[in-house]
Structure formats: structure tokens, C-alpha cells
Amino acid sequence: LTGQTALITGATRGIGFGLAVGLAQAGAKIILNGRNSDRLAEAADRLRLQGVSAQTLCFDVRNQQAVEKAINNFESADGPIDILLNNAGIQHRQSLEDFAVDKFQDVMATNATALFYLGQAVMIHMKQRRHGKIINIASIMTKMARHHVGAYVTAKAAVGGLTRAMAAEWAAYGINCNAIGPGYISTELTQPLFEDRTFSDWLIDQTPAGRWGQIDDLVGAAIYLSSSASDFMHGQILYIDGGMTVTV
Ligand code: GCO
Image (cartoon, rainbow, N blue to C red; front, side):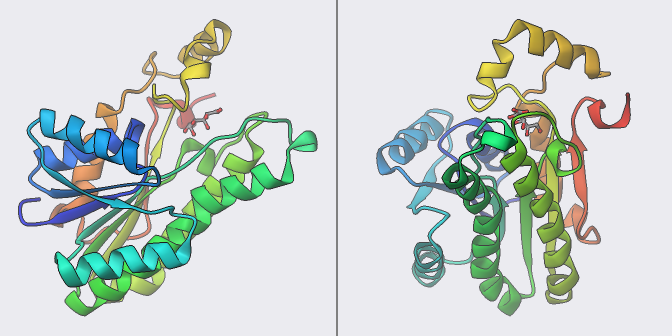
């Protein structure tokens, strides 16, 4: 990815931070995004400790004006954004019948609508260059569901549709849009589940690979979808789930 610049949203921790390290190790210049400037600076410091220099762009992905301003300013002052990794996401677990409306709306805004804001903002520039890679972070919940994550399931299903919609309209401009659908990856977001012995034993039993996923399990797919190796791939979702979605 040498010579390419990658913007990763929600990159202060978890999958976003791990993929930033992976793309950097493959040669990309990195822009970390987060909505908290202190956490963003701390993440950039952690990256530097791993020998990776990163720029930072602090904005809330749910704020379309802030998204457009940050990306247009970067493009005019610092240069092209070649790769967008739409990673930012939140989780809220509650029974659907009791699910708080404001929480549902926040999950949808962060995990789905924000990806549209980011995609629209970067593609205007990618279209001019007839080159760009957009990678949306979907989930096994793009095509499955489980109790108490109804907003997340709905949002991640929308990510699958948005990925196809972006591909349908933007492939003609030399922009590849695809998605990665992680299974259960051990991160801060899933820590309550990882620490729940009953859930974790069930998950391992449901997963042919017999283990929780690690963030490093996702890096290869992110590099592939960021590189010219995937130039003829459009609108696809790569499920990296230990086999969970293909077995009963
Ligand atoms: C949950 C988890 C899942 C995982 C991930 C699996 O409560 O079931 O949060 O949603 O985060 O999405 O791909």
C-alpha cells in the first residue's frame, strides 16, 4: 500500500486501531479518526511506539457537516485519501421490546448512516482521480441476529445494502467498495461477552475454528481490499468468522 493514504474511523481502539497498524505495516500512510481528541492523541502515540507515524482527524462520524469539512480540508491541505475504512461503530444491548428509542437511533446513526456520510464525502475526490477503496466494517449480524442486539443487527444489515449500493453506482468511477464481516472478535466492545463463561463456551461450540477471533485475523482482508489485488471485486462482504455463519 506504499504511497496510499488510509483514513480509519473509530481508530482509537479495537478493530479500528488494529487495522490501522496492519495497513501501516503494509506501507499505507495512516489518518486516525475518533471523536475524542485526547483518546485520538493517545492512539497516535501508541502507533508511534509501534514505529508508525499517523495523522489524526478529530470529528464525530454522526455529524455530516463535520465529516465533509474534515475530509475536504485534508484533501486540500494534505493530499488524497485513497482508502476509507469505515470502522466506527457502537453496541447497545437491550431487549427489542424495551429498546430505548434514542439508543436505537444512535446505533443506526453511528453504525450505518455515518458510513454513507463518509462514503459520499470521500468519493467526490476519489471520483476525480478515478481511484479509491472503501471498506465498510459489516458483521456476521449483517446476515444473522441474536437476542438483545436488534439495533446493531438492523444497522449492520444496512451496511450490507449500502456496500452494494456504493458498488453499483461508484464502480464506474474506479472506486471499489466492499465490506468485511467479522465474527466474534475479542475487543473492548465484546469484552462483556468474552468474560461471560456461558456465552463464550457457547460461542466456541458454535464456531468450527473453536476460538474467538483476534483483530489480527482481519488485517489480511483489510490489506487485500485496500490494494490493487481487489480491483475487480465490488460490493462483496468477506465474512471472517471462524466458520460460524456456514454451520448449524
Ligand atoms: C453481540 C456482539 C456482536 C459482535 C459482532 C459479531 O452482542 O452479539 O456485540 O454483535 O459485536 O457484531 O460480528
